[in-house]
Amino acid sequence: MSPVLKWPMDKVYWVMPISGVILVYYTIVNVIDNYHQRHLR
Image (cartoon, rainbow, N blue to C red; front, side, top):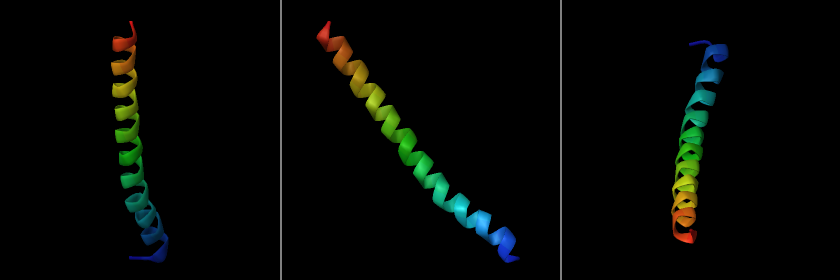
């Protein structure tokens, strides 16, 4: 494994969990937003 190939793979391992956390965060925000809109009407 050359360092050139190893560096992007390290970035992939960092980016994947972060994007997963962001996805979960937005899902929770949308659920809470929908819940509040339903109960305010």
